[in-house]
Length: 587
Image (cartoon, rainbow, N blue to C red; front, side, top):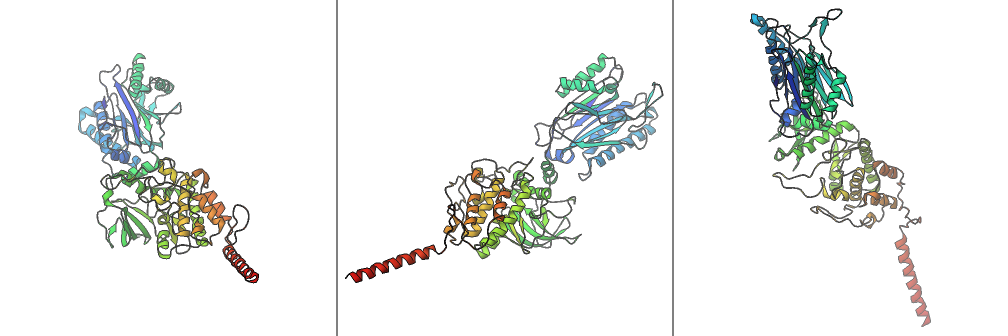
């Protein structure tokens, strides 16, 4: 008998998705003491928090109430599992609900003389995120098919007399007040196929035959009917039940993190200094803008100073905003670079609200420094750029692209260090580029994600950003630090800007070393093929530049003379004086 999904999936949910089927045949017995069920959550939130659950159970033959035991076990496990705390690991949650079912069935058997000894085998499969967990007691089985091979994930708990004959199940739900449970855990992969079967199947059809039938019947329902049909053809006397679960897609690690952290957490509507949020005391507001608020805070338990970023409540229903907000902390944790701001606080601390926690930094952003002091010297620009390159190299080596390099996201520490901030738009393996943003209410924001003046030209054309897009952002930042201007003018509110030839920085800073000018112009080239290929190449050129206060060497190989204008003016003046003197003498 079967209990199908209580919430069947109506459409494919991004991330984890499966196809399933199952069937149960009584064989030559009058009653079918097998029972099976599966729950495929329709809600993306429930799918992320609890996953997909499938169960098969075989009421022990010869015991009154075996069919009741199997039904009760399946129903209790399926329904109670989704009521366990979200903070519990899958293994702990399954152990709790299976043991609860075992106690109930055991007590029911003791109270009702007609059901004495009622019990059932149980095999459970849970798929959550990119992991699978198997829980098992008895002689039912769970198989995994991957890469053309089949493996049995469970061992039968049976005792047989020497020489064959009677087989006795040594573990079962309800057999005793408690039950020992075997667990198996592993990583999921797309196209994995799981079979859950009772001994009426495994005693008649062996694993290689199941593999052949799986190859012949891709549809789960067809496969299950083929298996029970083969059992019937071979004269199987026991009940035969089988389920097939096929993994269609598996979420990336970030999708798991996103769905786990952001599916249901609310945005805080009001914040104030002195307020305590999940063990953090907010000490002072650092910044507030359209995208959210930033507070200096302290962990009450550890005394650690931290920075907490809170989202703008207006974006509460914006899934893209939530994703971008979480990317920064998630990616920074993966990279763990001294040149990139690090997340802080216990990663497993329960949260009641949506926010991100980072290490406390002493200093100011590059944007603040430029606002206070204006243009910077060549040495200052090179020092900052060099450290930003180190941060970008750490990202690029992991195939992650920042895509939002600008003065606002470069932090100048008081000790002279530099850190990259805000990985909210970053993309990488399993983490696609953030889609276009919208204002609260759904109005689309023009252009590619990012800040107009620092977005690489190819991204305006809809091309994906790569390491050269980060080089462009850093190149524009260097140009701005040197000149106080943008290489292509102010592109704000220009969704389709034109990129001509940028003005040489020396037009605004005549004393600029020519070698530095060449590096900057190469970094901001409109054609990505003409830029540095990545931050490593840019860093190489920066490190090998002569930082002495020279004017540089132009492409022709002759040195540019900074006093040339004065020499020309003096020569012209001398020539005019000589000519005037000659005219006077002639007269």
